[in-house]
Image (cartoon, rainbow, N blue to C red; front, side, top):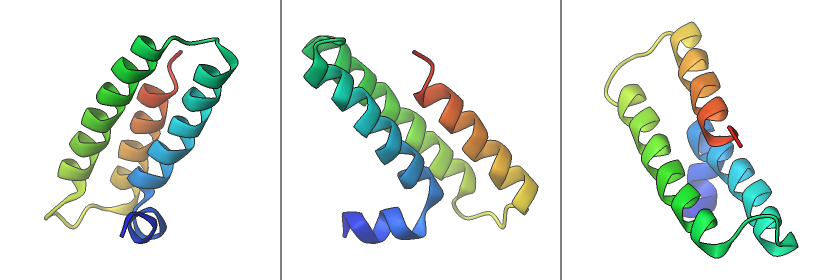
Length: 78
């Protein structure tokens, strides 16, 4: 189910890519467990917010790309 979401929805792809980056930082010791947990909670909220913006509306391609760009920036701000 998760892999299907990732294949079909760009917001999930962006979130998974950022998650892998921050998880690697956690494993290297660059980030603490608490920082990672905090980031993961914020990332899930941002992802869900982006999905709500896209859901139910026939969003034009340019608007959807802007939503994805903003999500990418928010998730990779550190």
